[in-house]
Amino acid sequence: MQIINQIGKPGHLIASSDIAVARITALWALSESLLGGILHGMHIPFRGLIIASASVLFISIIFFYSKNPSQILKAGLLVILIKLTVSPHTPVMAFIAVAYQTLLGYLFFRFIHSYKVAAVFFSVIVLSLAGFQKIITLTIIFGFRLWDAIDDLAMSLLKIAGIDNHALETVNLSLIIISCYILIHLIAGMFAGFIAIKIPEWVKEHDPDKIFKDFKLNIKTLVVHESNYELKKGVKKKYLKYTFTLIVLLFLVLSILFEQTISNPIQSVILISVRVILILFIWFKIISPLFTNLLLKMLSKTRWKQAEKVGQIISLFPHLNKIIHFCWQYTSDFKTKRTRFKKFLSYTLLLSLSSSNE
Image: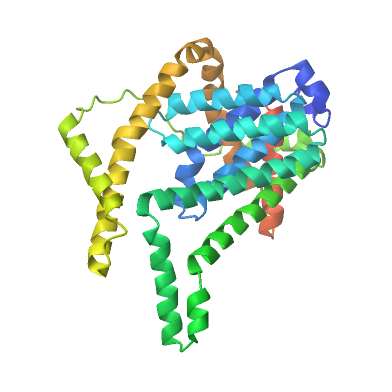
């Protein structure tokens, strides 16, 4: 219970022990490893936005309790190593996202001395980049014809509605959609920054001893589905022949070259479909494995040196999983979703910092 008495004293907390930062890092790694799958199973939209918001929150809290921006870099590296260990087949962009979130977190909290200002700006920038990342990905996969098709659809609908020609010339539905999408991420960034500022205060509002006792009483009857966090041995796959890969690349180049020359709608749909299939094949079968292997080679020495820390953090996953399930059930009686969300975050962080890993 040593860490319980230190809540609210962030400077002394990290000076006395690194356990707090290690457990927040474990929560971050757990969210990166499992949150996407949970959200997908619950059919919740804007999954990337939610995962990025969670990362922003954990990075901010790590700095708040450590007062050392270097801890962000160390935590980010551990999260990447854990993702490589637990989920080696994670998409490339997930590793890139963790990397730039970690770097931006370090820069903002290193050079902006006000925690509140840094947290808000950091959150807004990271969430905005997450929005632009999705737009860029769609453009790469579908090409600019996607946005042209959306504009053509808008013009067709306006013609049916009998709108004048001037409106038809100025309408740009794709730009409106992109702007709204980025605006949603901007608002989410401000919201995440607000939570990052407020959550240390929320934690101090509660009696840690009472919550800890309730957790110990309920943990024996709490049924949690334990996941296997051990690295699974992958089955060796046959490499595709170089000739087939070259043919795929050739078709992709041709689809890009002839994209602007085709005016027939049916041919355009076929071309876009072929382009999507080729790009997804190249991305998941060539680029992603190459990037993952390159990352493994680059971090091989670091992975070996950090093996003990990675193992310790992964060993916390089952315990943290129980804490999350308990806090979600413990807050089920609150009437409003806002209050439940606030209490859930507070209790989860409080128990993660205070309870022993038993």
